[in-house]
Amino acid sequence: MTTQKMMHATEATNLADILERVLDKGIVIAGDIQVRIADIELLTIRIRLLVASVDKAMEMGINWWQSDSYLTSKSKEPELEQENKMLRERLDRIEEKIKVE
Image (cartoon, rainbow, N blue to C red; front, top):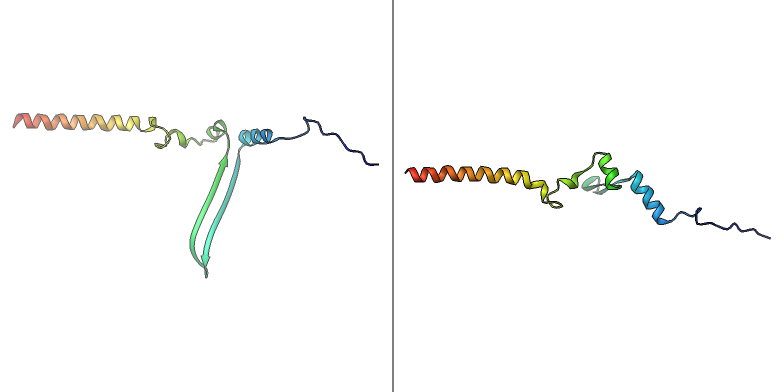
């Protein structure tokens, strides 16, 4: 006679629990792929993958998405405003020279 233990919901780990733990703690996956022919390296691909929540990434000092111009337009605004100001001043000086001549 075999006895089977009944599994309760509190004992089971579901995908949501695993995902929550991974995002809370973070996980790094690293690997290298090299293509060689006769000891001549043709290609090397270095793969580094970090899976973490935004909060955990910022806690680790990773926040590249805040300044990536492809992800946000705000990252370039101060630079664009400065460039526009310089161009306006340059244009004003050129227009003044034209008026004087």
